[in-house]
Amino acid sequence: KAGVTQTPRYLIKTRGQQVTLSCSPISGHRSVSWYQQTPGQGLQFLFEYFSETQRNKGNFPGRFSGRQFSNSRSEMNVSTLELGDSALYLCASSSTSGSSYNEQFFGPGTRLTVL
Amino acid sequence: GEDVEQSLFLSVREGDSSVINCTYTDSSSTYLYWYKQEPGAGLQLLTYIFSNMDMKQDQRLTVLLNKKDKHLSLRIADTQTGDSAIYFCAEEVYGGSQGNLIFGKGTKLSVKP
Image 1 (cartoon, one colour):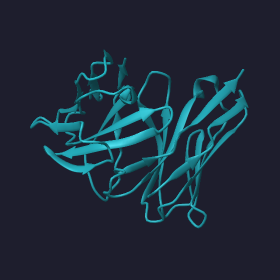
Image 2 (cartoon, each protein chain N blue to C red):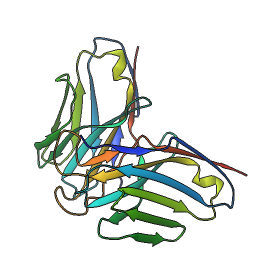
Image 3 (cartoon, chains in turn orange, red):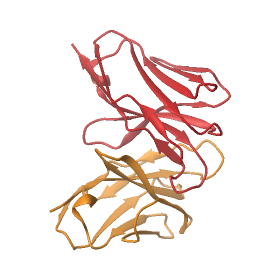
Image 4 (cartoon, one colour):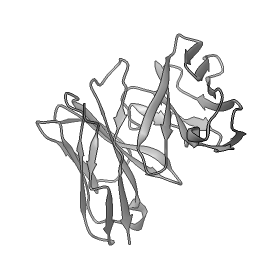
């Protein structure tokens, strides 16, 4: 089985621009979660999608948004980029979401640099 | 909200045992996890423990859970240079703005030959 793939792997943008990151989960997985990883804040949860619906959302401003398609692929969008948005964005997929063993498989991440 | 704490650095010699410690706050957590992150890579699940267990062994890895003190540890026996990485402890919670997994800030393990 192919793992979680994220594209692009690296991205450089300037302040004020917007960016779209893509995540393809493991085949058959319907839950996709997004995390932001920075040296200062560590891993912070952005949102989770399950069957095209946002089930959970972290404490990020509205500039961060996401969506999930019928094939479970997910995208996240960041508008009006700020320097502080520079981070590694990780996507994780799992086969279930809820009160059961929830192994999340992580992709390699997209490294976003905002200049 | 929930919080997971772990020390930031650990340095050991090749062949020694490594012990990485973690404390968590949510007593209702059902599963607790250890993830490994190598440079430039995503997170890899190493092992997990169900909250009604005290110990779990998986080859060179031993997880100890003290529910009363909300303390979790990961012991790596016969540590190798290939074990050098950042290790994250995570507790599972349900719903809420922090998501289903709350991560610690990670412990950077350095293994000296």
